[in-house]
Image 1 (cartoon, rainbow, N blue to C red):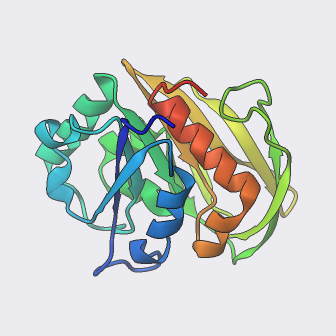
Image 2 (image 1 turned 180 degrees about the vertical axis):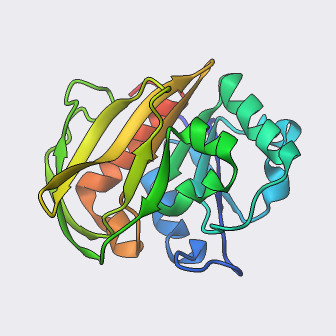
Length: 213
């Protein structure tokens, strides 16, 4: 299969507070096997225009909630996506929101979560390319909650119900010439072994980098 597409998976290994990258990296690489070659790093110095342009897709699994990237790195990621790069943010990868510009890029701000529990995920946009062939699924997860950015035009793909309220669990939107996808599940390695979720991750990455599904 075509493997000329490249992705950069960025996370935290040494300083991860809750979600160490090394626990899930192999499974994320496996999701994209035979489709996209994935390079793993915890080096935020790669968030520059010059380095990011080597990749078709940037995957954020960062876990540094209080560590802000530099203005130059913010500019690098914004330029990368707006110029046509793909961005896939998984679970704690939303921690990039430590810079408000990147919160706007992602399309929402994480506000907290109740205790880990079993969640039922339901499609809200079954016609989207990302959710094609995806059935509702159940997973043990952290029920992340968000303040959604009212200015970005997002398509909510997935939601879950918890304590009587519905919450978005995945969304996608265009950003300049690029595309952005956020997927809420991903607390631990078991999440990345769920066959339905693996398919969703693959299709999200392919959509973000405009690869034929």
